[in-house]
Image 1 (tube, rainbow, N blue to C red):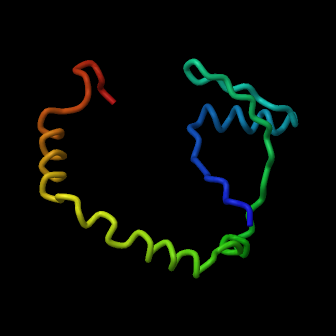
Image 2 (image 1 turned 90 degrees about the vertical axis):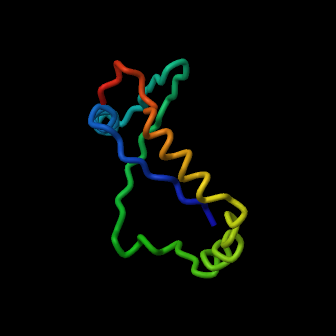
Length: 98
C-alpha cells in the first residue's frame, strides 16, 4: 500500500505560487535558504468518501499497542518545570515581535 503524502497548509504567497504554476501546468522552483526545490504540481481532488479509504484499523491498533506506555520513563514534573522556566526567560530575542 502506498504511504499517504503529508498535507501542509501553505501560507498565502506559497499557495498563490502553486496555484499559478498549476494553471500554467509547469513546475515551479522554490528557494528556501540555501536549498532550491523544483516542484511539479499534481492537482488532486479529494472526495469525502475517499478520506478513510486507506484507513486500516488493525494498523492503528498495532501502533497503539506498540507505543502505549513508551513515555512512562519520562519525568513529567521535570519536563513541566523546563517548560515553565523557558516561558519565564522567554525564547525570543528582544527584537522579535511576532
